[in-house]
Amino acid sequence: MRLKGVYPALVTPLTPEEKVDAAGLRRVVRYCLDGGVHGLLALGTTGEFPAMTGAMRRQAMETVLDEAGGKVPVLIGCGDTSTRKIIEQVRVAARTRADAVLAAVPYYYPLDQAAVERHFLMVAEASEKPVLIYNFPQMTKIAVAPDTLAALAVHPNIVGVKESSGDFINLQRFLDVTSGRDFTVMCGNPALGLAAYIHGARGGIYAACSLVPKLCAEVYDAYCRNDLAAAVALQKRASHIPLMGSFGPAAAVIKHGLSRLGICGPTVSAPLAVAAGQEEKIAAWMQQLGIDGR
Image: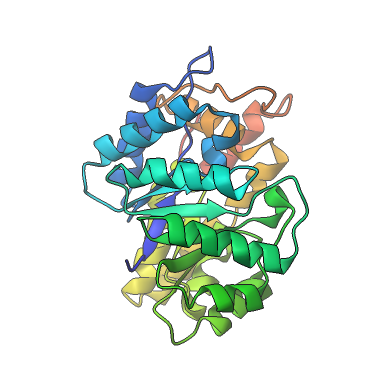
């Protein structure tokens, strides 16, 4: 599998009782597809997978796959506190029409790089779907080192990495150590998107792309048609996206924005919430990004 393009890390709309809002999730998928995205990720960090039961995860992934209808590739995020639990999720995803899985490092216990490598090799051997490595040390506490990635990239079922550390030097190292292989490095920070594509990343998987799919896709599309002036102008606007971190957790901010657009409700898993008094700041931020949330 050869990934390329921009994929939103989809939010998972919830009812006020914190059940999966399937109708809202379908609207989010359609909104992203209408925005020109090149693929979809269900159950990533922004999809609130740690707060979900197995039944909720299955409902979310099946809803996304059904609404996508084969129009674009769909990735399924798999993360938990042990390799065994993640493999269980991978096997559930394997029974769907998903194109690949995005597997995280187990979180909670500290791990050395030998354990990180062993984990991903076990997942790759157990998975019937291609595996992307998810490097997000801010959430898992454990980083995938470039040398570890180089060793893992040799495995035929490990096809890429989502680099979400936000460290551009680390992204460059990932590109360096996998150069010459049929291996995809996907950027996880939209503020670095254009620079990442220029250096060799084949696309990006972005949380806020659920809210601004058109802008994120347009940066990539302008780069691909060699319209650097347009790409730079669009990237300058997209560079405001990470400001959402000052308003609260990403899932809460994105859902708040989508609720302003009438796409889904704002409910997030407790205790996540938009920071107090940030609503009008979010509306102004959305306008900076080219969407009217007032």
